[in-house]
Image (tube, rainbow, N blue to C red; front, side, top):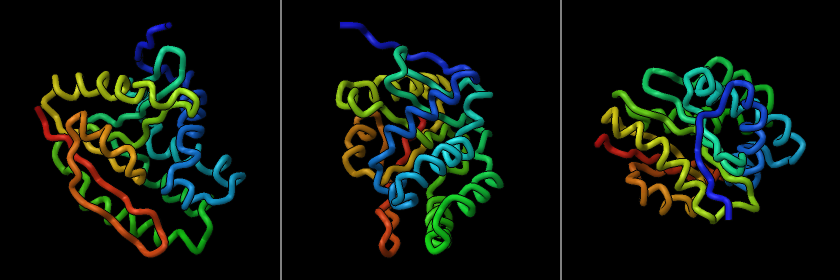
Length: 194
């Protein structure tokens, strides 16, 4: 059996990385609430990924498993999502009646997002047939080694309760619960600096 390794994804790999994230999030409660129609998901979600985490490619903080079975997009300290692009993507790709709740959820998440130096994980995903084989843990461990060398916090959000134990095994703690009418629950999680 081939051993998987993690390495930094090059800018030229962005399309492939976004593709893996798109496949991995196809059943994610929050993303499919945003895009219940599959054609809108396939056209809109990759734009959302790029707006949220595209800066990771320029900063060497997008990671992939050697056979591209999984990827993670991290934003290092001081690098934020492209908020103007994010607003444009949400307004142009999400059904109009959901847009106000999306911005409300993002506003509530901002209350939990650390203000001090931290690494932010907007997306991590493993290709569906390869899930459950430890690749998510491998991707997390790879990035968290650097986070720990810098003695930084790490932050993420999830809408999938099944992922919470994985994140907890890597030191993340639940810091809140965001519930909006008819939307999936969002769980912000912080990993204290070490």
